[in-house]
Picture (tube, rainbow, N blue to C red):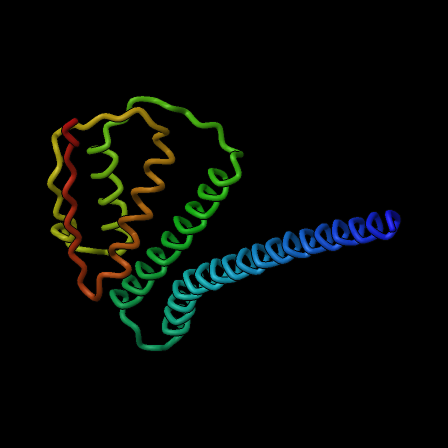
Length: 184
């Protein structure tokens, strides 16, 4: 009788261990599937962001091959291509910077940073990238607001937020920025 009880107890413990292993395997598999989807979405997004300026550059080059274009038209096409090349370059730099930050391969330099200045410079960079008019970014901010942070990471974050605001705001975006100190 006692040997049967030990055998039954051993069987129950073994079954419980097998079930725990199966649950842990299932959780791991779900995490892998979600990570794979996230990576695929990232690749799709990057591919789209790369294809748009490349298609524009190709179209400009094809147009420049036409006969009868004036010097002014050729210069406009050249300017459009330079803008697209700059856009590609900035995009690739942003991806590389984000990757370095995410994987901790960049040494952080923490210092006191004027957020107002970095925000103004980031807005100007994004305005220039998209060829927006001067009033595209309306900013309410103190003359100077300082925080202790990594200036490169802060600039990357602000440019990303402003870039998304422009991209998803329609055909003639106007972005309102209201920055103020929290009162504690």
